[in-house]
Image (tube, rainbow, N blue to C red; front, top):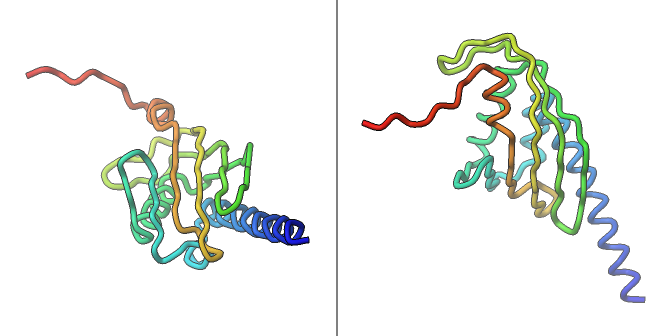
Length: 152
């Protein structure tokens, strides 16, 4: 009987984490910062790329910048897996670059980029994230050129 109760508890936890995952993705791509403040732990550690750790405030600032650059942004979830206190999401980001930010003028170009994230949940809130995005593809779609570093 104890195993059945453990199984039920695990299933309930994973169902709650799946609902949290959907809520998080929806809030992040609607730029719903009030909902995000409820969903994200105040002690959040956000890792948008290798070697970069951001606080809650830094993560929210990044989301605001993205929403400014791509006000029509969407994210279609292709896969969502939940296991224990973690979920993994793979999807496609789409948007039109119509907003200027930090000296980078809007191009008006429509873009799409693949992205994946792993998220750890603690006490019903998102506590830790790891992200992987195809930024090279995004930059190429925006007109950036990849050039080797010039030797001096």
